[in-house]
Amino acid sequence: MRKYNLGFVLFSLLILAGCSANKMQTKNIYKNSKIQTYLPYSDLARISHLSLEYDGYLIGIEKRERESLRGIPEECYPDRFSLLSESKENSGDPEIKKKKKRDKNFKRYTGDDTAMLITHIARYFEEPDNSPFNTHRKPYFLYNAYDEYKKDDLNYEDGYEALECLEKRLVSDLKEKVHTWRREPEKQEKPYSHIIILSMGWNNNQQESIYRYNTILDKVKNAAHNEKGDSFNPLVIGFTWPSVWSGIENNWLKKNTVFLFSYFTKQGDADEIGCTIANWVIHKVVLSAKEEFQTDCKKEYKEDFSPRIVAIGHSMGAQILSQAIISKEYIKPEKSEKSELRKSSSESHADLFIGLQGAFSAKRFVANAGWEGSPYAGFKDYETKFTLTSSRYDTANQTARFITGSRHVGGKYGLAYAEKKENEEEKNKKIKKENNEGVFHVIKWTNNYETDLDKLSKIPKEDEKKVILIDASVIVDGCNSSNGENKPNDAHNDILDKDMGQLIWLLIKRFAPFSVST
Image 1: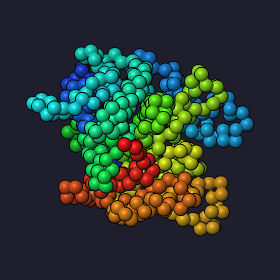
Image 2: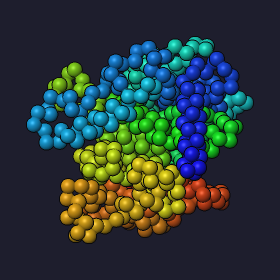
Image 3: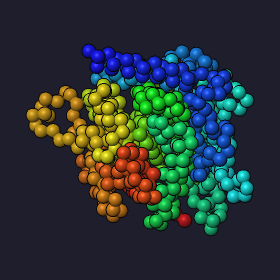
């Protein structure tokens, strides 16, 4: 009996500490200097050396209580979105039950008493001249919710309206790059080959996220350069979001227990961002800008210089971007479109999704599996190529399997689930239940360039539409091949070395190639 009482007390402490941390997260940050919860997410406006090292943009997201915001929608989700089951085309739809189940999750993701909103859009294009105090790119703000000192009166819709400016700037950026290249080809200033959309995951603050973006892109560019892939010239769009609960924390209990307890809250936050902000950025900003630029290129140059679109996410960042790609249908049709059509203004899709050690369930891709409504089960209807890395050494968040049944795609349970083959008896039992057959194509990575490229190039035709799940245990083992650092207990974060750079480059080379004639 004492064991149960002790367990109840500990659980209660976690709940209380968690609630306390959640309240801290939404207070006015200027009222108490000790509150450090979401100060890191405002750093874009305060620290000049926190710099993206590639041409691109950083979109800063924060979390606030709904009642503290102006412009908040009456529905739990933004007015720019609508439920799948509300569409006029649903009359007699045999899939209506599945749509309603997805809608239920959509409302759950967005129905909290807090809301995610955009507070910064920072532009990094100015090259430093390496003079004193000018060794890093300085941000130019397309949007800064804190443009007034101590401003804490935020409008929810302002961030979405700022994304319209971002779309226009993207078109201009793409045009200017091509114009410069066509005018002065001897400078080898080639067009942007890819727009790389990036998101990091749980417990990665803004500084850590930007550091990781720079590191990953450096390793990918080096891998491309080593094989004379000099046409790899990315334009970057990176998200930073409040994935850290309680921020900088010295309290032992909070640091070691609430830290873990925050997992479920942050999973919900990741899905909310994916369904709404990231969804909008990919489909209404990036892809719309690409389509406009593509049309202009064909008119002016009779050629298509538009970049390929690649989304790369780690851990819960992979959850954000995969959810964003799959949630396109939730964007309301524009007024000029027929109201019964479920589509956004962009007709195209992201070319490639790369989920590095994803912290979401493999069952999301499997029909009738898991408690989440199989939100990704329709992945074959998208032109996007879905690829994932996994490792038997990735032991992060294993307890999720025993609490929710989630088998994270990045860990050993997700890998085992994807590799599982059912016998005939099991198949007969699961005719109307979950069946992962036809969902995953597992590739065992060797870290040999030619061998791995050959595996990617010779995927059987019947497996081409499947999710490519790479067993990357040979490189995701906690040992950093770039600096020799060995952390076997942290294989989940082993994504920053040259080996991972080569893996990412081979996926881009195979599924989102770009070339221009000189």
